[in-house]
Figure 1 (spheres, rainbow, N blue to C red):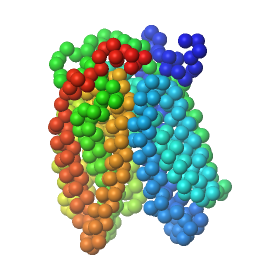
Figure 2: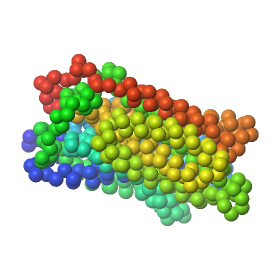
Figure 3: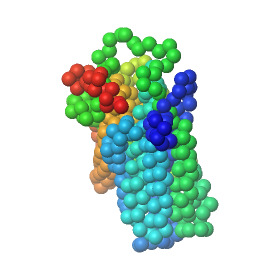
Figure 4: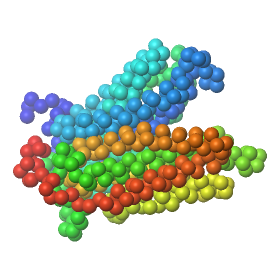
Length: 466
């Protein structure tokens, strides 16, 4: 229609001959930006020294680590909630308007947080980066994924892997960028945090605009050239559609909710424990002078885990196109149970190389779990409202984002209260995480085809899509 605005879904429909490989860069522009959330920890020490100006000697008026940890928790909770609330709106208005909303919220969240840092009002940082920025995270997370699944019906795992790989890699850009900007602005403001937030808010807003302007959706009925849907019967890959409201009434949705929640909770166990565990278990004291893992080496280890988190998102999700989504999650959980239970033994026996390899494999499957779940949903519920369904499922991530750190810190502190050190202080953490994966394994084992009574009839599906 002539009255349609540039942001309307109708203005994003690709014309004949459009190259679908132009869409993944638009998705990556969003996910590489919002993936900065994984790098928020680089602000913790500087923000904890705004008054004293000394990260090693905080002032009584400085923000505590506990206060600062709440910022990230709010952002992750709002990621899941906003994705759940705005998922159906996204399917209705299309990806361009949703991606613009994400860019404005995410970039604007930095600007509000900057004011909070300048005024030393933590509630403004909570509201800015946590609440507003968290909404940008949720809307931005689901909008490119939903679009890519529609463009790649022949390779949905590859499609979701391409997009969500960007979220895993966002920290690899955001972390050095933040450090460089804080060093540049350190003479302008305490620790350089407030101007860094302003600069990053503007940079990410501009960067995300590339995705907003370049995103396209396929025309109704579009299929890749030469693509013939498989005629081989597979009960776990539907040719029908289920709308978001009916999807949450199915047992399959809640089984997949448990699958994602357990996978993320266990992965957070590694993220929370790997760096202190490797330093304490492989220290100079534990291994002999000159052979231990230093703080700098531990930071490099965390960077390596981030790399495998990123690569695992694409590798495992792409592999699921061949293996099937359910068998792929069986690997995540089955292999994961064995590896999680093995970590304390490797740490106690000072097997550093094997310890690093095992942790990297674990993190690859943690990332793979995020990237494979949208394709799993597409198989189970169809493509009609997969973005909205994915958004509602992400409340599992919000739950794990709270449950995981609380559980890990409680278990670790309880062991240290018994004067246990090194690997012994982390045994219960990793054994508990292995137990959590058992729950996920059982939930995935119980997944079956969605009953036909939940399917949207063809005429109704056309109406919903319109």
